[in-house]
Length: 106
Image 1 (cartoon, helix red, strand yellow):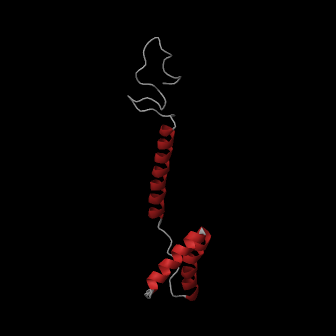
Image 2 (spheres, rainbow, N blue to C red):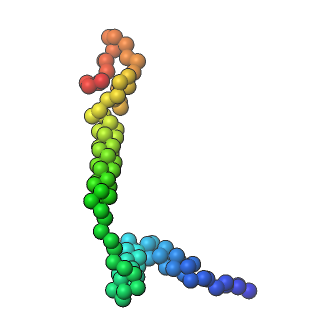
Image 3 (cartoon, rainbow, N blue to C red):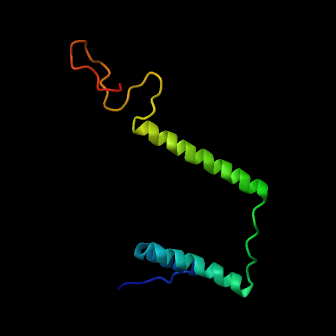
């Protein structure tokens, strides 16, 4: 005999969200956004407050640092930047004179 337990409301919401996310990212976006928009439309939730100029500036600076760090990481990863004492990817560290030598750029 199979006994199935009843799920609580939060479990039903979570299960619906997981099913929607598995089905389509757009369905997940709609499932998450629609209730908020409906609550704002009916007046149950206040509209969002605009950010202060200080908060916008600080967020922009943080985003800029993150983007710059990402660029530096990618440039280093693909060998456009070298750090002191390290070789580029694909460079042989211990090559002997008379051998083919290191690849160009090492």
